[in-house]
Length: 546
Image 1 (cartoon, rainbow, N blue to C red):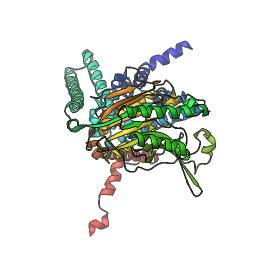
Image 2: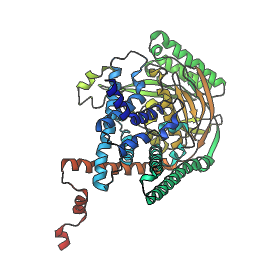
Image 3: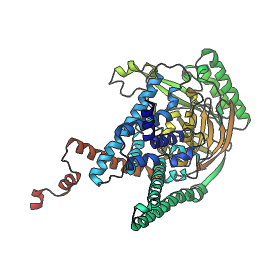
C-alpha cells in the first residue's frame, strides 16, 4: 500500500508543487510572488504528460478548498457552515473544470489550436469574469489578487482593470514555462539537431523580450501615468473607526449599550480632532436604527452639534402594504443632523439571500441559517460631505462583499465621486487569511478607479488606501482605535472606468461563441463551425439570382 501511495505521489509531484505554490500565494503570508511561477508545473503536465480529467478536477477542488478554507472557520456556531463551504468549493471546481474542458474542445474545433496551457489561461480568465454574476457570483479568487501587494505591478488596472492583471499573471507563467522548456531542449542538444537548437534559442529570446515588455509596461505606467499628476490635495479630514467588538458579543443584549457608547464617544473624539467625517463598520449598530427613535436622534445630535459627518452600518426595514423589505444598509448623518440611507446593491448568495428561493421552495428549508432574504438596493446618486470651508465632495459607501465586484465599483466611479468607502464586518472569520484577501480587493478597486478608499472593519483590518494602491494607514485585527488621512482626489475617470469594460464584454462574447461551438460539436459529431459560418455568410441562392 505504501509503495502504491509513493508511486501516486511521484506521478503527481509536479502537480502538487503547482497546487501548493498557487494556493499559498493567496494566504498573504509573504510568498505572494509565487503566483508568477505557480502554474509552470501544471502547464508542463498539460502539454508534456497525459493528464487525466480526474487530476484536473482534483487540482481545482484542492485549490479552492485551500484558498477559501476560511469559510469553514466561522467564529460563531452556525449549523451546516461546513456544508456551505463544501458546496461552494465543489461548485467553483466544477465550473473551472467545465470551462477548461469545453474551451479545449471549442478552440480546437474553431482555431485548430491544441496548446493546452494557453487554452487553460483563456478558459480561466473567462471563468473569473462570469463569476461577476449578480445572483450567483463569487469573484473572490482571481489570479490578480495576490499581486495587489505590488502597487507598481497592478498600476495598469487603471487602464484595463484587474482581469487584465490576471491575464498578465497567467501569461508570465506561460512564458516562463516556454523558456524553461526550450532551455531543457537546448541542454539536451546531443539528441537534437543544430537547427532545432538555434530555433529554440530564438524562441527563448522572444519570450524573454515579451516578459521584459510586460514588466516595463506596468512599472512605467506606475511611474509616469498621467492620472497621478492630476491628483489634488484637499482639506477634508476623514477618520476611520474600528470599535473592535467581536461578533459573539455584538448581538448579545448586554453588549448593545457598549457598542453604542463606544461608537458615540469615539465619534465625539474624532470631532475634537477636527474630523469632517468619521466612518464606522457594517452592522456597527446591530438594530433597525429607524425603529429606535432615541438612538437615531442621538446620532443626529452628535453630527449636528459637532459639525461631523458620520457613516455607520446598520440594518434597515421598509414595510409597504403587505410586503417587508430588509436591507443591509449604511446610514449617513450629515453635518446638519440629517440622514441618508444607502442600501447594499450586491448581496452575498446563500448568506444574505437565497437565489431562486421563490421558485425553488426547498432551498429555504435546506438553508435555514440564511434567515430572511434581504432585498437588493439600487444605485442612486453619491452622498455629499463638505469641508470646513463648505467645499463639497461626493462619495459612495460600499458594504463588505460589494468591493469584490469590479463592475459595481466601476459603475459608481462613472459618476465621478471624490472617494469611496467600504464598511465591513469580517469578524465572522476570526484570525483567518480572509481579512487580507478582502482588504486587497479594495486595493485593486482603488487602482482601477483612482479613488481613495476608506475601509472600516468591525475588528479589523481597517485601512486607508491611496490612488496608487498604497495602504497609507492601517489597523490590525483586534485594535480599537481611529486612524485618519486627509483626502486627495483625482477629479476624472480612468480609461478603465470609461472604456475598460468594453474589452471584457468582447471577451465574454468570444467566450460564449467558443463555448457554443464546443456544445454544438458535442451534440452533433459532424458539426463544423467553418461550414456553418459559410452557410450563414453566403447569400441565399434566391437572392443571388435576383
